[in-house]
Amino acid sequence: MKKPDKNLLLALSLATTALLSHGVAAAQHSACGGVPLSVCPTPFDRALPDPKTMLSWDQQDRVVGFRNDYRNYPADVFRHGAARPLPLARRQLGEVSYQVNGHRYSLADYLQRQNVAGMLVLKNGQIAYKYLAHGNSDSTLWTSRSVGKSVVSTLVGVALKQGKIHSLEDKVTRYEPELEGTAWQDVTLRQLLTHTSGVAWNEDYTQPDSDFAQLTQCEARAGTYDCVRDLVTGLKKAHPAGQHWSYSSGGAWLLGDVLERATGMSLAAYLQQSIWQPYGMASDGVWHAYQPGKHDVGAHGFNATLEDWGRFGEFVLHEGRLPNGEKALPDGWLKLASSWTQAQGSISAAHPQGLYGFQWWNNEVPANAQNVEPAPEASLKGSLWALGIYGQVIMVNPAEQLVIVQWSTWPQAEPSFSAQPLEASLMYSAIAQQLRE
Image (cartoon, rainbow, N blue to C red; front, top):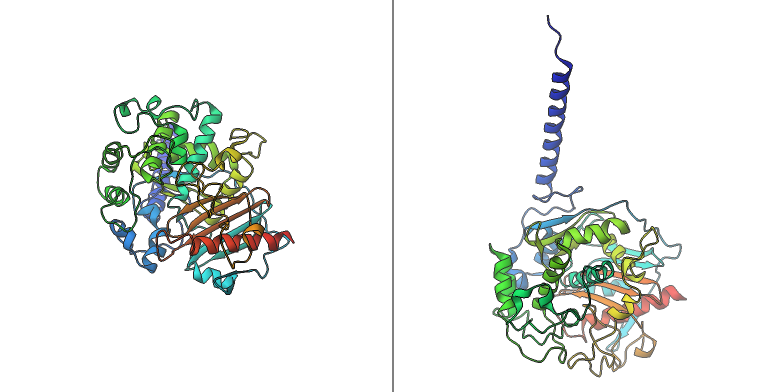
């Protein structure tokens, strides 16, 4: 009997291995709800709320929807590299409390009052406290909402450092010349970053016909990119650029689009290349894509684990210093990003220094807050807050070497600053004091 040809056997073996590998990859892809992640997040909820009604979900819908947002929409995956460790701090967070409206609340009270689904406190890069609720785990990918804006603004800093963006004084039309003749034609990148474009945008989360609600409806149907682009490019001018601050997810979407034009990469791909892998994130993440592989939404849609949210905060805290010693951000970027705009609408009695920077918030205890503890003068100063609706937070404080992450399902998308945001600033100040002593 003639012996089988060795080359034929090798070819058959390779083909069999490839088929088996493909089968494993396909099974993994299916197991993660159609998203090709290296590890499937848990818990995996079978029944998901309708994304079209996101602004009217109840509390349980928000829990399930926010931790499964990575598979609610088309998505781009950004891959992790060699994990940067987050060791346990020798000193763990102890009893801590704050006072507001004549009542004192403990950390346990805070978690309940804020509907906290996850919380992480990093002191000097070490875990001083970690909390996960509602079955969430270390592999859960939670959606950022507008915390993603702060990720995009940081990527703008990276692109500036790399020379892919020439200057923050560049007009939008340098990167998107087709915007000549629209309300955006005289707007600079700095004005997009600070939401001082002067272009009208209604961010009201309670109005079913607001611009933000229309953007949400675009996301729930086919042709999302064209739908959102038509919405944003059709906006009208309300004020001269640079004079008025007005929060705008439409402007943030455009900033992300400009960044993709400047880099020639989707947000997910650029994040993976410039931060996620070089800095040492431990898990894959997912970005909501309007055109998979080409365009991710700049206003929100970033999904990652609790600890990787914390690692991103550490990246910002250290101004983009990578493990190899290189800096991914320009010198002085942190100070620049937190130079709160002085435009009308940003300054108030509560925040006389201004409320908003490069898509980071100033959420320190309001200067005019009364009968609170810690008092305004003793509260945590110099923090940058990435904030997303329903209580998503990354707080970065360089002076205290402190990063705090919070996942929440607040009953309201955007409550008054005298409610949950105030209590967050008080609790974070109390945490800083406790870990400092």
